[in-house]
Length: 298
Length: 298
Image (cartoon, rainbow over all chains, first blue to last red; front, side, top):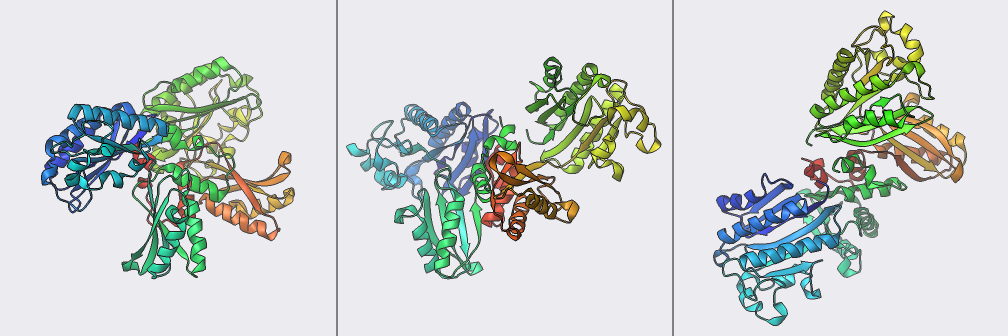
């Protein structure tokens, strides 16, 4: 695989194993598509699938899975803790290798258009693919959820980007878009004071004047008796992991608190860690082409 | 490709483009084999090829290239600055992915045996594949070079591991073995005093009581007016890059000198940089399985 895009479709079915397997099967044994992971959650009643592949191979597999989900999931009967507006709730595309964000946006629009035409599904474009500023954020699109969408979508300002201006009777509506990979990066402090983690989180995160592409919250790790600055790094190419790490160290100093470790939850692109190594070792003129595994993938 | 081994055969032909292309062609367009790089050097009169692949696919391609080199290279006419004892001077195998060192040793022995039988070529096993302690080091095997080998190989203590106890008349002898990947890692100092770089190199390298798996020399970067501790890290899984970097920083402090950067020359395994990032960020319980590109290669 030379050009690789990742896709993390979220389906509104986290309980029925038979239905889950039928949806996921579209991503199995397809040339140029790799199923990396799928996680079902009973309480959320949601299925999160992670696939990677060449854009040309990923598209038909996705359209097939979307068709299966429309057939099997009836949102009128769906209950779960996670906010959702459709059977295929959201389909993010993430450029991984030799694909620009512009190309990822293009691919997301192609899938959005084809899915809307094939299944009479209303589709909203979000994140980098958004056509209006108030559609960048998935939460604003999804506000009101499946139950409120029947009404919301009839308002001219909420006309979908593709498909009919009415929800699909059983599958609701879908959001499709392109975004950078998320890195879930948490930094641990040698304190049990949640207030301190919260204050540091505020200084680090973008919404309070901190680092761009950094969302942060203070949380308590009760079992360990420590607190943590829990972050979502939304574009590691613009705000590197080491920058948030070093800033947290500095801010922790104000409170007489030390950083005692960190964790990365789930998958992380190689580049996020390589950038970090290059920074700390001060490696001059380093190119990703020097990484053996990067070359092997060519 | 799931299981990947690297091989860096060195051939004694760095001048004749036609012959070089004929040797290299064995590694082109072979299923399961990827030609990453080949570098010819006129003064050394030597060709260094870097290939990766699945062991089963790499072996026949290598045997084919060895056959071509035996056909095309006549060591009786070979001149060059680099020490050499054969047309196929040395064939190191390096485990990269889902291959243990023991398996790499096995593969090296299979290739050594098959090449010796097919081409009546004497082959010495070296590094991890060595059968005697004094054959671990390639330099001891190669001492005397092609010209001295006709005599040397008749001594019982220098009987080859495979093949006849006499050199191949035109192709000499070959060393085959398995080793860990080398990382060429150089650390720059803000000083023009070569003596300081030399002293630091001595304290860092293994032969003078420093870090295992670290070879180091002081060198002057005349154009930049600075000196450098130039290292070969021979097993980054045992002596990580950050350890030599931090030790050089500490030792530089004795001389009132600062580390001002570093460089990695050529290819580096992803793991060497990821270990470094994990160290500096203090990431707990990190697994290589969390690296997206690692998973994609499955």
